[in-house]
Figure 1: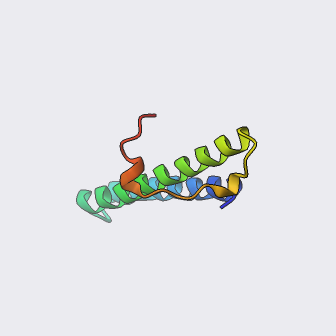
Figure 2: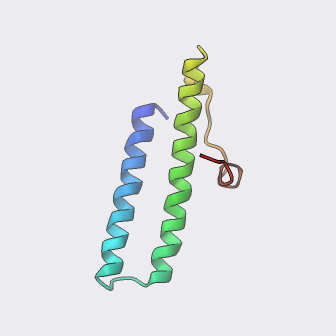
Figure 3: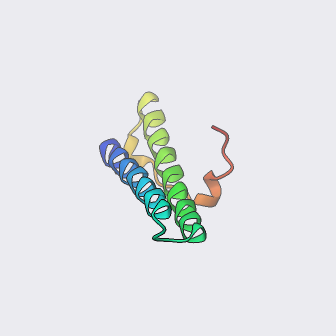
Length: 81
Protein backbone atom coordinates (compact mmCIF):
# COMPACT_ATOMS: atom_id res chain seq x y z
CA UNK A 1 0.00 0.00 0.00
CA UNK A 2 1.16 3.50 -0.77
CA UNK A 3 0.86 6.38 1.71
CA UNK A 4 -2.21 7.84 0.01
CA UNK A 5 -3.94 4.45 0.06
CA UNK A 6 -3.18 4.03 3.76
CA UNK A 7 -4.47 7.52 4.54
CA UNK A 8 -7.61 6.84 2.50
CA UNK A 9 -8.17 3.61 4.47
CA UNK A 10 -7.68 5.49 7.75
CA UNK A 11 -10.37 7.96 6.62
CA UNK A 12 -12.73 5.11 5.74
CA UNK A 13 -12.27 3.50 9.14
CA UNK A 14 -12.90 6.80 10.91
CA UNK A 15 -16.01 7.40 8.81
CA UNK A 16 -17.31 3.96 9.70
CA UNK A 17 -16.70 4.67 13.38
CA UNK A 18 -18.80 7.85 13.14
CA UNK A 19 -21.57 5.94 11.36
CA UNK A 20 -21.55 3.28 14.08
CA UNK A 21 -21.82 5.89 16.81
CA UNK A 22 -24.80 7.41 14.97
CA UNK A 23 -26.45 4.02 14.59
CA UNK A 24 -25.96 3.37 18.30
CA UNK A 25 -27.53 6.73 19.15
CA UNK A 26 -30.47 5.92 16.86
CA UNK A 27 -30.98 2.56 18.57
CA UNK A 28 -30.13 0.59 15.43
CA UNK A 29 -27.59 -1.60 17.23
CA UNK A 30 -26.70 -2.59 20.73
CA UNK A 31 -23.82 -1.19 22.74
CA UNK A 32 -22.20 -4.63 22.62
CA UNK A 33 -22.41 -4.75 18.81
CA UNK A 34 -21.01 -1.25 18.56
CA UNK A 35 -18.14 -2.00 20.96
CA UNK A 36 -17.24 -5.19 19.10
CA UNK A 37 -17.07 -3.40 15.76
CA UNK A 38 -15.20 -0.41 17.27
CA UNK A 39 -12.53 -2.80 18.60
CA UNK A 40 -12.10 -4.17 15.07
CA UNK A 41 -11.92 -0.66 13.61
CA UNK A 42 -9.35 0.40 16.22
CA UNK A 43 -7.19 -2.61 15.37
CA UNK A 44 -7.37 -1.70 11.69
CA UNK A 45 -6.45 1.88 12.49
CA UNK A 46 -3.50 0.74 14.60
CA UNK A 47 -2.23 -1.38 11.71
CA UNK A 48 -2.64 1.45 9.21
CA UNK A 49 -0.83 3.98 11.39
CA UNK A 50 1.95 1.47 12.09
CA UNK A 51 2.42 0.77 8.39
CA UNK A 52 2.45 4.48 7.60
CA UNK A 53 5.10 5.05 10.29
CA UNK A 54 7.16 2.16 8.87
CA UNK A 55 7.00 3.67 5.38
CA UNK A 56 7.96 7.13 6.61
CA UNK A 57 10.87 5.78 8.67
CA UNK A 58 12.15 3.77 5.71
CA UNK A 59 11.90 6.82 3.46
CA UNK A 60 13.71 9.00 6.04
CA UNK A 61 16.48 6.37 6.22
CA UNK A 62 16.85 6.43 2.44
CA UNK A 63 15.32 2.97 2.08
CA UNK A 64 12.46 1.72 -0.07
CA UNK A 65 9.20 2.47 1.79
CA UNK A 66 7.53 -0.46 0.02
CA UNK A 67 9.45 -2.93 2.20
CA UNK A 68 7.10 -2.21 5.12
CA UNK A 69 4.40 -4.76 5.76
CA UNK A 70 1.33 -4.69 8.02
CA UNK A 71 2.21 -6.27 11.34
CA UNK A 72 -0.16 -8.51 13.29
CA UNK A 73 -2.51 -6.63 15.60
CA UNK A 74 -1.21 -8.42 18.70
CA UNK A 75 2.30 -7.21 17.86
CA UNK A 76 1.38 -3.53 17.63
CA UNK A 77 -1.34 -3.29 20.31
CA UNK A 78 1.09 -2.72 23.15
CA UNK A 79 3.20 -0.06 21.45
CA UNK A 80 3.42 3.22 23.27
CA UNK A 81 2.53 6.24 21.19
